[in-house]
Length: 573
Image (cartoon, rainbow, N blue to C red; front, side, top):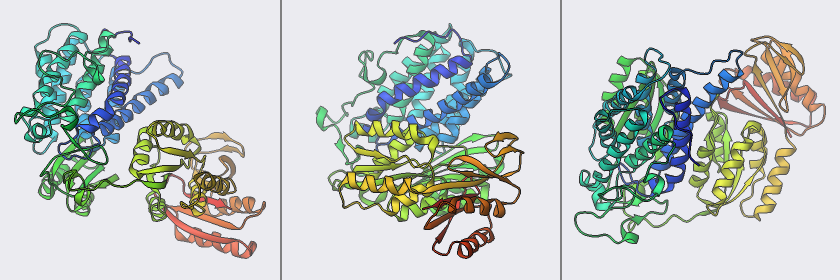
């Protein structure tokens, strides 16, 4: 369905572009994953780009929703939307290409948000594309030609020569990017050997195609596998290496996870990514240290918030370097693995799918460790940063099982989890969604999980255990508001039982004790306490003592949850 074209870059154009880019990457994701051979053949470039843009979309939509909820008729400005797009991409960036894309969007936003203009015309778009390409190249420690950086520079060069409105400039940038993409195998030997174009560059072409559609209302030719790619070769398909023709079904040796295997490719064992709060000077020192530790170093961001990406053999040293520079968080460490992405398909036997797995969303690092020890694949939900459906889909794929039990552990994530389950079912994976509304319900479900029994029986047992567990949390009110227990003030300690505010207090231990007494008044055999970082052990000791004295037949188990948002989670089975 054709879009109503935008005539200039304003907040609505940013919103439209982000939405169209997400749709386009969604259609092209599997294709891009399949041609991912550089810098590591791990088959996830398309997925990483999709998740990065999904985070940008969420940030832009939040800005529009915030203005809609306000009293004034004015919507967000171009500066508001552009900054939100860049920030969302920065905090949600995945992988090498996703991190570079985040910097490309940040570079554009720096121009589009300059002096808070009402809108940008063709000249503004040209400047934005140039700033994007240049800033992305500066962010990469050792730029390599034949990659997404080359494609971005070609797009900016082509835009520089275009005169006209935003649609004209966008078309020129797109055509320049496509031509550069088609030439990437001749610039990067690993692409030529595999017979593919650069996966990150292919993703950027898709994003620029969405930009063309934003300003013309027409889908750009060649986007997401459609026909008509110009006079040379199809830049979205596998290409023939100079050494000779490669049969269509033999151009790539497909690894078990869909990544293209490249003979002789070697490299570090870990990918390390984290957000970092640090000053510019500290980041410059960090770049030097990480550059000495590994390769594929990309550091993007600014204004005190950075996204750091590097491939290393010593993941701990990479994280320690971040700690010395500032405050790293949202740390992700992926083990490429011996005999995995750095070996050929012939050397690596296909990994057999497990029969069954559990995928769970958890609110803190402590619980993530607990769930992992119990055999679950975890997705970390940080305070204020719930996972998107694409992240849940990726976790289900990572579990590599024929049957998957999905535990969202949050009432607000039920629809997100349902969307993820629907998507992976189309891939032949049997998925059961258990509507757990708290991590303590997930703990109860996981405790009765038995992978050797029939799938339906296991799901029923886990669902029953979760449903029989009442849940509560103790948190601090951020603002004055009406609740089921009366009016609370900012700073009050709130006790929520089954999602509703039941107690308003001033002391964490006393509020938690009141909540616990109310829950146990209806009976119970087991109390689970999950303490956040800010809660001292004395609170747990106080509550354990209260249970021992007042409820003789009830056992208590205590866990440390880490940075989990709530001060305390309580479960009663």
